[in-house]
Image 1 (cartoon, rainbow, N blue to C red):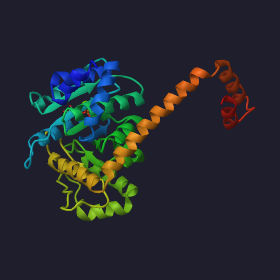
Image 2 (cartoon, protein in one colour):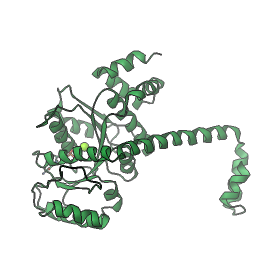
Image 3 (spheres, rainbow, N blue to C red):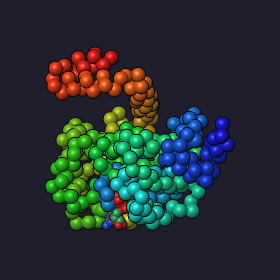
Image 4 (tube, rainbow, N blue to C red):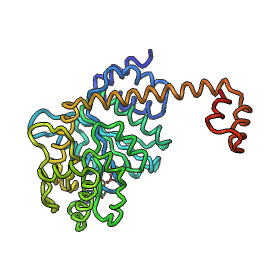
Length: 339
Ligand SMILES: Nc1nc2c(ncn2[C@@H]2O[C@H](COP(=O)(O)OP(=O)(O)O)[C@@H](O)[C@H]2O)c(=O)[nH]1
Ligand SMILES: [Mg+2]
């Protein structure tokens, strides 16, 4: 196969080969999908961390700081970091991407870091699929931690959360009453919560509002978490890790100032702790299994749907739909008529 040489180069960590592989996948080429098939056996090692939140919340700055700490850990070996910035809202303008480059400038020149923006517009489902494919390539190429930055926009953040092992939700102050609306959904997907821009005056309010929401979402859990850590809402480190891995994960809440690198070390501890938690509880494997089965399931469904569509008579569909709309037949009955 034509792609074999390229797969070897990706596995060897050749940056140009990786960049090319990502482009092929982004463009949905046959070459790209052959490459994914070949690389699949080498995937499943990386820790996938989603970083999601509103535009301007400070996700890119935060990702940059997180990566810096993983590259220069106080203890242990540097971790190789892949960064995927997904921004469905800004396709070909280049604005956001350029901005991210500037913010992530500290990391450029570090061969242990690979940064890639995905500027493809497309259906959200397609975006999640490509993000997953990007992560697989970086995983196969030996990046141990993959940070996936996404703009929180409803379904996409849920999709990414399903992809990631660990989801960090980033808020920033000044959202006022909106916080109420901090869509229970977001709290549900958050393994770790961050209030970035803790240097801004309204940060306390935001932290408090989020904490209240967390109390509602995780009543007993949070009171236990409370006992452990959260006494103050001012910008002060909130230690999270106890030496042994807990049975239940209490989504911790961290204030950060990503422009100054404050609060990031604790956040990084939480990321590491969450990975250990998932692995020690078998959840890492469970999530992986659920995701892969779902992917196979999706493929099966769309395969059979397209097979069926090739066989069925178009006018038959129209007739059945017509009768359905006229309420002559129920949806269930309509299905029987179609089959
Ligand atoms: N004051 C303050 N500004 C920040 C902080 N983090 C990010 N910013 C600024 O907020 C803007 C948006 O940051 P960016 O990381 O691009 O946010 P993203 O859109 O969520 O990726 C930039 O101008 C950053 O310099 C912070 O902790 N404090
Ligand atoms: Mg960004």
